[in-house]
Image (cartoon, rainbow, N blue to C red; front, top):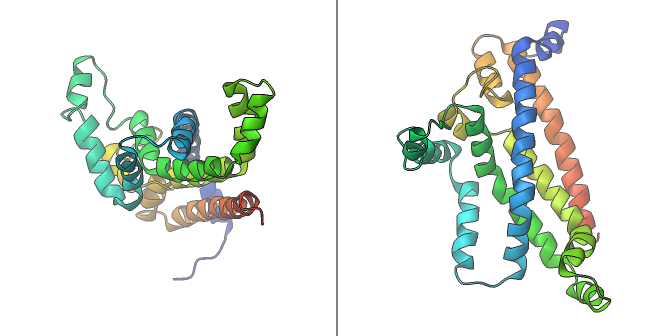
Length: 234
């Protein structure tokens, strides 16, 4: 099958289904990255700097989503947070439902994307020269000031590279999302789910959306390579 860019193909990118999926993906990935930055950054710092009991277990748990099939991740989330799940059954008592909602999309994206940010951020924090931090402390700076004004700026290329990689992974998430959140237009149907849905009825729309995602991926890869080179000093 040969596919060529036509007027219909470009029009497919602006179809209501595509626009809804794109806007939902923007919202959910933004929420995902906000959580990762707020929680993942201090977690990465602790993993890079603090040697505590159970650190190997924590590191193993962080890596599990990388090797776990997305469909298995979706089932795990459903068993934990579904209406009859280990946690979901108690939330249901208070009228809180997570599965098959936009919140479920965000949870699935966080689950699969977190390792990519935390690992890269931890590498960045580990590469920061501690003598620079110690010099700032000797000069009278507080530990919080050293963290935000010295450590974070020095580790910033790695943090941004990790954030971009995690964002791209969240944007492309399919398996965990379709099982835990379903595919409901405007609610849980992100771009990957829209591509799958459109593929069954409108190949032009599916390919147009795929090209759009491919463009995002290309830009992210170039940015990550540039930032990684800066982190490594090459």
